[in-house]
Length: 221
Length: 273
Image: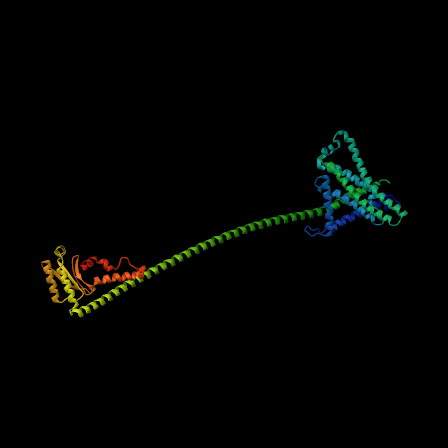
């Protein structure tokens, strides 16, 4: 039994090994982009819209309103980054009901990659919003004594992001695997449903935390 | 349980690509469509607002126009009422004037009829009395009435007071004797003689026939008159008749009495002698 989809090798190209994490990530990406492309091919700006456009508009509107609530800023600049974080994690976890699929978010490599993206995006957005000095002043506030703690916090929260998501998804997967060997009927179904719920909650938490970090970097304290 | 660094890097790239693709295919178009829709809705709302304002303006205009029409109608009604009242008053006035005229005409006609009746009555009464007297005289004395009249006149002429002759007869150059009948030459000479005696010198005497006197005879010189005739008696009779008629018809009673009486008071006085 593999703890991570990284260990499943799909295609060995010598120095580069294409594992299941990357392949399933591509699947998720294809579904998201393909779906978005199919729906937005013929968008309506009139009062009558298709169901799928309605769905996507709901997602976009909710995301924007969440970002606006948290950052108290115009969501336009952060929309693509945070929305994609949520949609990618959410779709990755949602697809785990398909047999044979293992969520890329169950791999520490993926979650660490996402966390590093957040780790880099926070100063990028902070500098775009307030300038280099304005952003750096964040670390010595309210007092320069806080500088080391701020740096540690920066690192640790990135790590926490990565491990939290990875741990939740992986544990759910392992729990189901263990339960299947003990009580093969009914109980794993309940836990599967619970796993789906946890997956969506984790997607939401990840996106909201990323938003909070960005907001703290872009807002003058 | 460790990080596979190739997978780590690949996932970062995957994620960045996904961000770019979703920005291109999802957020961009969706946000653009929503903004467009919001704009169109805002435009529609604005248009509706403009329409509403215009409708309100039009409603206001119509309300004002209706009020104007209402006021105009009231005005016209008032004018019409005024005109009708004036017309009615005018008609009433005209009617009243017409009635007045008719009444006046009727009264005048009544007056005329009364006058005509009285004149006819007087003539006929006079005629009758004359005829009766003439017959009575003729029956009684077998003399012509005219002769008697002339005799009476002659006797009166003789008995005229001398002072009257002095004042009235002396300076009058011409004397006229009016009579209701043609006097014979004999009678004329007799009367001329009497006058001659009374006045004392020659006078220009002229004879005239006047049917109005009704079988009478009258001497006229200047403003003095002397004579006898039935007219005086008839005037008296007429007075009585008029009084009797006035009792029956008070509205047309003429307080001035018959015009002849008022016109010739001297004659009545002279005749009374």
